[in-house]
Amino acid sequence: MKQTLLLFSFLLVLSCGNNSGSNQKLLPDSSGNINHLSVVIDNDLWEGSVGETIRNTLAAPVDGLPQDEPLFAMSQIPPVVFSGFATKNRTVFKVVKGGEASVKILSNVYAQPQKVILVSGKTDKDIIDQIEANSQKIIAALKSEEIKEKQRRISLSLHNSSSIEEKLGISIKFPSAYRIAKEEDHFYWIRKDITTGTTNLMIFELPFNAIKKGDSLVDQIIKLRDSIGKVHIPGPTEDSFMITEEAYAPAVFETIIDNKPAIETKGLWDVKNAFMSGPFINYVIEDKINNRLLVIEGFAFAPSVEKRDYMFELEAIIKSLKIKD
Image 1 (spheres, rainbow, N blue to C red):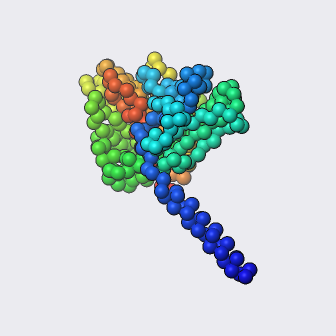
Image 2: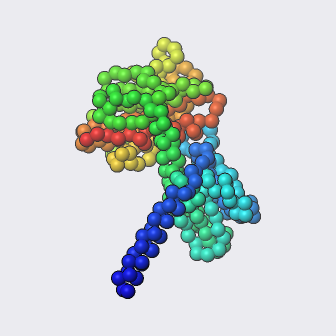
Image 3: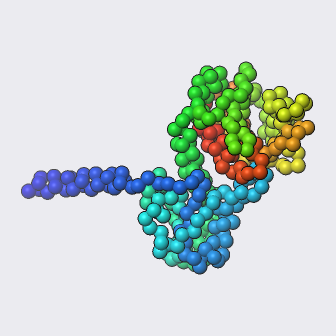
C-alpha cells in the first residue's frame, strides 16, 4: 500500500511539472513596437504625482540626441481594461496601490517574451519612492528586453560578415540591408541607406595603451574620433570630413561589452566645412587577450526626423559583438 501511495505521489508531482511546462508553452507571443511601454495604472494615479514620476523616469530624454526624444513611448491603460490583447505587449509597467512597498521584475507573465515591472505601495509616496530608488534597474530591465527583441528581428536577415570576422577576430550581427562602404587594413565602414540619409558603423582596432584612463577620457575620445574621421569618413566636398561637434560635450560612461570593460560615449558629430550632423554612440572595448582596444561606433545622418530608433538599432548591433579569443 505504501509503495502504491508513493508511486501515485510521484506521478502526481510529475504530472504537475509537465502541466507547468505546458502552461508556459501556451503563453501567446508578445507584440508591440520597439521601445513602446504599456503603463497599467489607475487614471487618478496617472494624472497625479505618481504619473508625473513615471513620465520623468521612463520618458526622460535619451542621451546624445540633437533633440529631446523619450526613452520609451508610453500608453496608459486602466487596470479594469487591461485584458486580452492589451496584456500581450512585450514590456509592461504595472502600478498597484496597496500592500508592501516593492518593485518586482517579472518575465513572461501574460505573453512571451515579456518583461513586467510591478510597483506597489500603500501610499502615493511609497510608490514614488520605489520608482525613484529603482529607476536605473527598471530602465535596464526594459531596455535589455528591447535590445534582445531588436537583435531577434535583425537575425532574420543577416549580412555575411565573414571578412570582418577573419580580419578583426570578431563576430557581429547586422542586417543584410547594410553594405561595407570601406575596408582598409583593419578598418571597416558599414552603411545602410534610410529614407532621409544613412545609418553607419565603424569598426577598427588600436594599440592597448592608445587611451589612458588617468587623463581626460572625453578629450582623448574626441581626438581619436576626429583623427579617424579625417582619414576615413569624408564629407560631400573637398577638405570636408567628420569631426566631433565642439558645442555639445559628449557623455561618457563605463559599461560592459561582451563581458569586457568598455567606455561608452554618446554625442553629436558634424562635418568640417559642410552642413551635416547627427548623433553617435561609441564604444572603446578593452580586449586584453588580443592586446588591443577594439573601437566600434554607430552614427546616423537623418535630418529633420526623429533619430532614437535609428540609434537604438545601431546599439543593438554593437551589443551583438563577440570577440574571439
